[in-house]
Image 1 (spheres, rainbow, N blue to C red):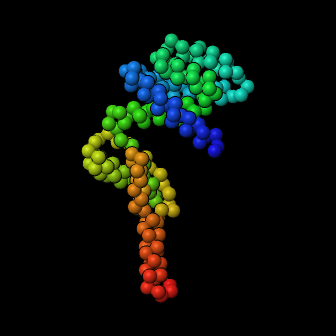
Image 2 (spheres, rainbow, N blue to C red):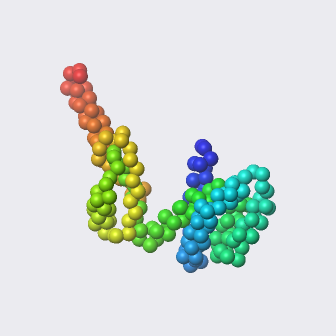
Image 3 (cartoon, one colour):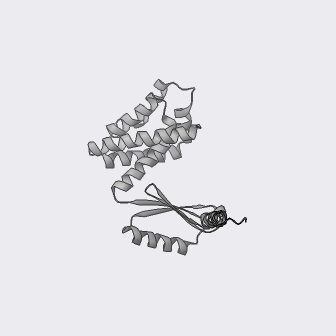
Length: 192
């Protein structure tokens, strides 16, 4: 497993625990606000993550940096989360943890995320049309559509939503038809 995969998995676990604790302590909004601020800081101060993931700085130095930057400013739950990430040398997972927490936050508030893979980029009007159709199908206006362009699917779309996938690509339909033709050829005793 490569480092980015490990950081993704760790971020998923850390943020899930953080979210559960935030719900339990009724601090979901405060933690989200802190994580939004942390994400902005990470984007603006690129050297922050270089220091936090560097093997040349000790855990104590990193912990002191967290204390200096965020101590007394962040909710105690967010601050404790950051200190735990530092103590366990998991600061490389912060980006993924923030993204997962935001997804959990949105889901709790009825927001839906849909990922679509299409063969070619859609125009703004096509995107709005797809968004309107998805909103109607899911009975909510709170949706975010993410698109991935993959010419290899030839046409149609692959839709991922709530851990499920619907593959209605031309590529998969062609494979299915070829498999059917081959199976029928075998069953009829005729070679193809």
